[in-house]
Structure formats: C-alpha cells, structure tokens
Amino acid sequence: MNLYNKHKYIYLGCPVNWLQIHITVDQNQVELCETLLLSLGAVSVTLDDAEDQALLEPLPGETPLWNKVIVTGIYQQEEDDPIDVDRLEAFLKAQLPDVPMRHEILENQVWERAWMDYYEPIQIGEKYWIVPEWLEPPEADATNIKLDPGLAFGTGNHASTFLCLQWLGRTDVKDKIVIDYGCGSGILGVAALLLGAKKVYATDIDPQAVLATKQNAELNGVLDRLFVGLPEEFDREFKSQQADVLVANILAAPLMALAPEFSTLIKSEGEFALAGVIEEQVADVSSVYAEFFDILEIEKREENWCRISGKRKTI
Picture 1 (cartoon, rainbow, N blue to C red):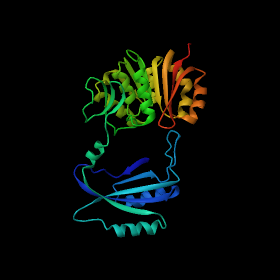
Picture 2: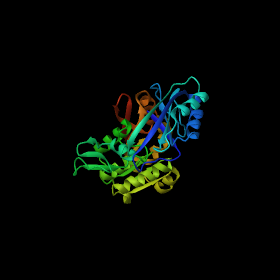
Picture 3: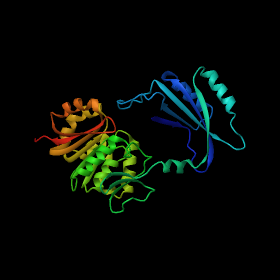
Picture 4: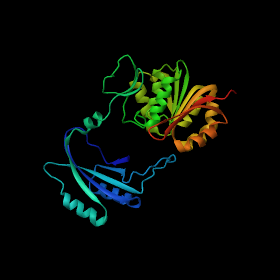
C-alpha cells in the first residue's frame, strides 16, 4: 500500500532510466530519510508499508504512518553523467546506520504511458462501466463513466467506491436531486448524472477534489447539471433544499459526526448510502444513524469494507 508521493518535479515526457533506492526505517526515521533522499537529488520520494500494517481510520487532516516504512527515492539517470550508486549508498548508510537498503535500475520506459497502461475498464453492473478516458468503452451503448484516474481519490478500484457505484446503479436516481458528500474524483456524482439525476450537489474539504470533480464532469458532458464546492460553498448553494438521494464515501468517524446534518439534507423517505466503513464499525455507525434513518441493507466487499444504506425516516 503506497501512502503518498513527495516530489520536486516529475519527468514524464520521454524514455529515461531511473535509479530507485529503497530504505526500510522505523516511523521516527522517516522524515530524516526523506530529507536525505531529496537533498541528494531525488525527483520523487514515496512511502510504503513494510509489514502489511493496516491504517484504517485516519482522522481528517491526519497523515498516519506505519511502524515500519519503506522510503523510496527515485533518481534520474543521465547517460553522460551516471549516478555513483556506491558513493550515494555509502553516504546514506553513514547517516542511517544499520537499516536495510537496496537499489534497482528501472530501464528506459515512457512512465506516463506505463502509468496509463495500469488501468482497465471496470464493470460495475450490466451495461454500467468505468472507463479510463483514453480507452474505448467495452460496450458503447452502456452507461460509461469516463474518468481521469490521476486526479483524486475515487477510481472505482477501491471497494468502498465500487459499493457506492453499485448501489447507485440499483437506485432510481432519474430526475432526482442527489448529494455526493466527500466527492473525491467526483465519480459518484458523475455516475448519478449519467444514470439520469436531475442535479448533483457535490462537496469535499479538498480543493483538488473540487477541481477533479469539475474536470471529470466536463469529461462526461454533465458539468451543466453539477454544483461542486467546498463545504461552506455547498452550504450557501444548497441552502434549505432537501435531496432525494445522498451518497457519502468518507470514513466512519466523520460519517457519525455528520449524521444530524445529513438528516436535514435528505427529504422524508429519501435514500442514502454510506461507505468507507469497515465491518467492525458498522454497528457504531448504524446506531448513530438509527435515530434519523431506517437501515435497510448492509453489504460487504473485499474482506471487510462495507456499505450501509437505507431511507430517511418519515418526518
């Protein structure tokens, strides 16, 4: 599981060779390791789990780390001035003694193309697909959600996103008002619009997610039926309306905190789906929502990711 990428710049335009140095360190050594790699000219530094340790519930604004972390520095290899790997590793070992370290050369690829080749269309249901924007849809007459997977969280690959997309495909959203709360890439709001929603109001705390949602809506030709903004902008725009459908793919803690607000955003008998919840959290989330909502279905995918869905109680 890769956590994030720090970089000075990313070089994608033409085939080049790259040197990768992988260093396994304790959590308290990560910052020093990153600083050393970047100071030695790394164009990118990534952090990965070294021991298959789950990080299931980060709070908003937190960036948790594993106890053991693989820190990887990526260096561009110039043909006329190759990197002295032995000297580089000797310096790193002097600063970080007794830690596992290895290197590898990644040969001559167009990395932009390699990244794109990783993605394939994902079938959500009958006549219902997510299609990377550079690929042809497997079924031209299906509901095809075109997506730029690189913009923000929400590609359909993650179980919680898939569960929400699946639920939207089975829910009557035609001519309905839909809220996509915690929109990420905008994939859920775009899906609702392609499935016939009259209007989608989307929001996220991340400005990058707002931009990604706009771009993916434009890519799918539905931008004219979408509003997307930060929470304060959403509150001003939505005002005293109530939605027919609400979908929120976030995490358990913020979902529980948002239950009273969601109860005011959904009309009586309006439908909702919540995701980003693991199996052990379902009872707690459901008990909070039971005050305002009837829980009708709990569905699980890929070990323990769950979706909770139901209806607003009659007001």
